[in-house]
Structure formats: C-alpha cells, structure tokens
Image (tube, rainbow, N blue to C red; front, side, top):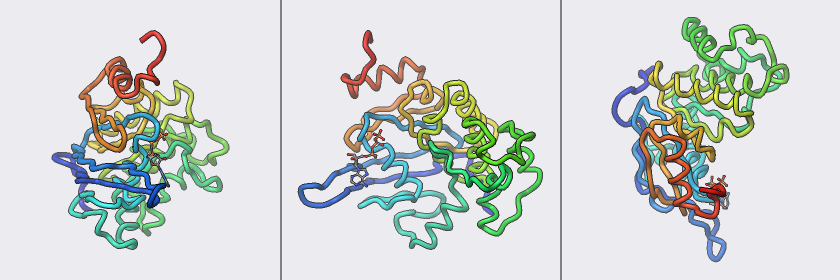
Amino acid sequence: MTATPTTGVALAARALRKEYGAGQSRVVALDGVDLDLAAARFTAVMGPSGSGKSTLLHCLAGLDRPTAGAVHIGDADLTRLDDRRLTRLRRDRIGFVFQKFNLLPTLTAEENIVLPLAIAGRRPDATWLRQVVAAVGLTDRLGHRPAELSGGQQQRVAVARALITRPWVIFADEPTGNLDSRSGAEVLRLLREAVDTLGQTVVMVTHDPAAAAHADRVVFLADGRLVDELHEPTVGDVRDALSRLDPAAAPAGR
Ligand SMILES: Nc1ncnc2c1ncn2[C@@H]1O[C@H](COP(=O)(O)OP(=O)(O)OP(=O)(O)O)[C@@H](O)[C@H]1O
C-alpha cells in the first residue's frame, strides 16, 4: 500500500461544478470551485446554509459525481473513474466521519473499527490497531456495541474506523453536530492530533466557529463559490468572516 502523502497537495479540485435538476428547477450547487488541500493539514469548510458545503465534500470524497471539473487525489482523477474503481478508491484511500456516526449496531466497537479492512479482505496490523484505539481512548470499550456507548464514544469509534486504513484524506461532515460541547471538543482534539502526530489530512464541514477554529485553514463558500479563507484563525476571526458572508445570521450584539 502506498504511504499516506504527508507533504505537498493531498487533493486538488479544478473548476468543480455541480448542478441539480434541469430547466426552471435547476440549482447550481457548486459554481467553479478550485481548491488545493495541503497534505497533513486540517481544513474546515464553512458557509451559509445552502452554500454548497455538503455537495463540495461529497464531490471531493467521490460520494457524488460533479457535473463538470476534476478532483485529483493521489494519481487519480475521481471524476474519470468508473464506479468499480471509484468504490475501491473510496474504500482504500478515503476515511469518513459522519454527523450520525454510521456505525453498524450489531458489531462491537472493535469490529466497527476494522470493518473497512475486513471488507477489503485485509488483516488489521495489530500494532497500528492498538495505537489507533489508544489514541481515541477506547481500549476498555472494544467489546461494547454502539448502543452501549455514549454519543462521544461512538464518534470516537467512527474516527478510529476512518484512521484504520491510513487513508489519504479523512472527510468529516459535521462530526460534532450530534454531540454535547465536551464530547464535541474531544472529537475535534482527536482529529487535530491525527493531523499533528500521524500526518493525516482532514477536511471537515462545520457550522460551528469553535469547531472550525481547530483547523489550520478555513475556506468559506457562498452560492457555490469559494469567497474567503482564513489561516490559523481564532473563533472570533471565523465568526467575523461568517457574518460578513451572511449578516442576517450573525449573533445579536456583534
Ligand atoms: N439532491 C439534490 N437535489 C436538488 N438540489 C439539491 C440537492 N442537494 C443539494 N441541493 C441544493 O444545492 C444547494 C447546496 O446544498 P448543500 O446541501 O451542498 O448546502 P450546504 O451548504 O451543505 O447546506 P446546509 O448548511 O444547510 O447543510 C442548495 O441550494 C440545495 O438545496
């Protein structure tokens, strides 16, 4: 297996366009997005509701096909792969963390974590599994099923499942959206640590300025276009940038 790239550009989108529907009901969800994601960095994607964040994440991750444009990851252009190759690349090279955890209820935490490897017919590397499980703090919960875990613990299982294949990129869609602030902060700390200590590349969609402030870079979408970005921002910087984009949504008193 090729090593996870830890320098240079992990993923590049070019002139990405996504349209839904046709005729009068046509919606342009992405309108020419160019984006380079640096390897071993944590990038957050923000923007007003309907600005195209989820569509962008899905197109970058190969979960959805753009109408036009290219997504380069490793030596592949996702938009040119047939369904079989795309599925394999997603399975082997891409990790996902979803808002609703998406764990299999009948499997234990450990079985959920190694599931991407099991599906690929690969054995987990015992040392790496131990390291990942320790990093997410689940060593004493491995035999529990999701219903026996708190929301924060379930999301930590999902982070471990995303890390286990050492993917090129982990995509996280509102990973703290279903968690209380303490569990959410724990998950963000984990993602941050995966970037800093494992050289993992992470991209996260979030509405929460405090979550985005954990990232190295925040890019802002409006009407399907990238309109702003911040590097190593504070929570206040993120709030200010958001209120410039969407003054109606700015908290009162700001
Ligand atoms: N399957 C679909 N069919 C038609 N229109 C869609 C579809 N999915 C998204 N859209 C439209 O595309 C635009 C972008 O949607 P998207 O979900 O990417 O925005 P978002 O920024 O993630 O929004 P939110 O913050 O509310 O989740 C919106 O106008 C949305 O209504």
